Image (tube, rainbow, N blue to C red; front, side, top):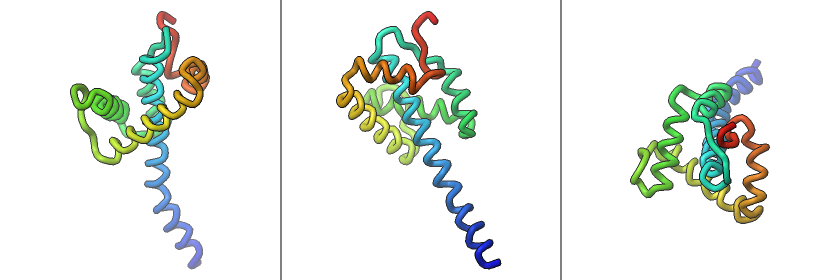
Length: 128
């Protein structure tokens, strides 16, 4: 019986950590999708696809817009978007660093080609 309470307690503690991990993965996907739009020829992002992905990942309503605003704010030095809570801004910073590292490691043409597979359903060829 004692172990049942211990396991239940651990599950309750693990839920917020899992939700944060899910959001961090989503932030990285959104950042990479927008990076692909900017860096990769003939690539576009369909906003509604990002919203649907957030819903599939069971993230709260409005997550896509918060992430978009945070990315815009960070990548324009505060000229666009809006600063979000510190946790989200930190997630955007980590995603930016990881993406930059991947782009330098792989080279932009290979990174772009890889994103077509990794982000299938989030990025599309322009006009398609």
